[in-house]
Length: 132
Image (tube, rainbow, N blue to C red; front, side, top):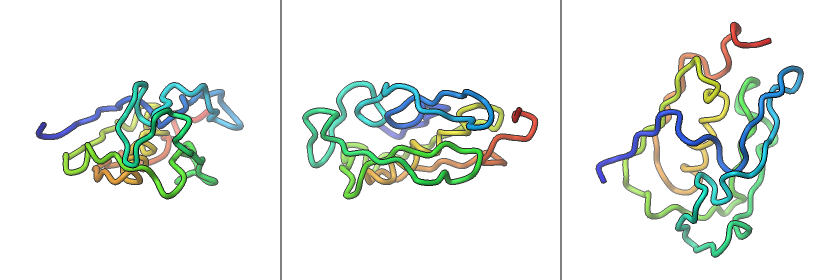
């Protein structure tokens, strides 16, 4: 494999994001990716036999006011060693609702020891025209 390009790929780790509108804007949906970024089993180091072995924690504050708070692993995080050394680029467009949570996948990968590039659109937050 030469590399991975994710274009508005898969969504945030663990929970789906619901968009109920103001004043809260974001709400956790159900767990649809119990292995972090995937629906099916992923190889971690140290190994996890079941998703319940992945200890997770939610960011106390979002990285910006118009971004969701990410779910990450509790430290020390299990590593995704099979992805180490593979170039990964994660792309999100400014007009997409993905801009509110795709940064979470990048943070999750970095925490799991996987370097990746996730250039933010011009605005890391929702443009004013998409609010309200």
